[in-house]
Image (tube, rainbow, N blue to C red; front, top):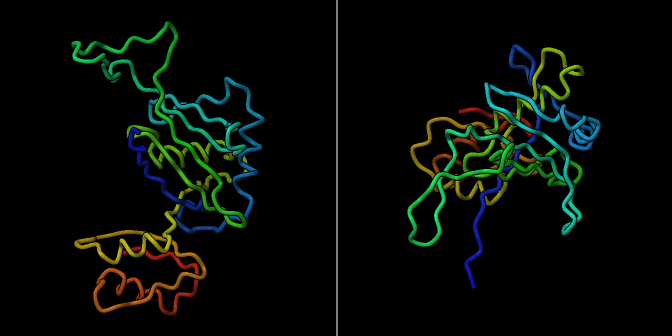
Length: 209
């Protein structure tokens, strides 16, 4: 039996950011509201250009799991297409059908009921998080004016354990769940620093080091 593929899933929470950097927390239900905006778009309006690259954003549904999710696909330039081969044949340029596009995907799934936490899964060359943020911002631009939507990383308990073992970290920015007060210990210097900075900030605080 072939070994199951391991994919990395990242968790984020959207936040509205003003031009001066001030963050405004969003009410729960952001993703369902955003999905409604996407579903109202025509096929042509799903396409947009971000920093010279064509993207397509859409609301999709997985029949097998009955799950709704958001999709952002990044079109690869033909000059950047990979090659392909069968067995030990020489590698050849990948040829698509006329009008075909090679697309790198990013999937966003509303992962935790009662919150705005979203799980993201992308291909190795898929849309960057900054591209996803630009997409989110453009879709609801008429509602937020000059503000923008940013995706703030959410740290879970198992990730805190990994952070505890990390070394030589210069800078990071995280948001803790409201019931997740990081506890200091004698071994994890990074977690100790987080714990010390966390005290007095209140639960749900964002810290940048």
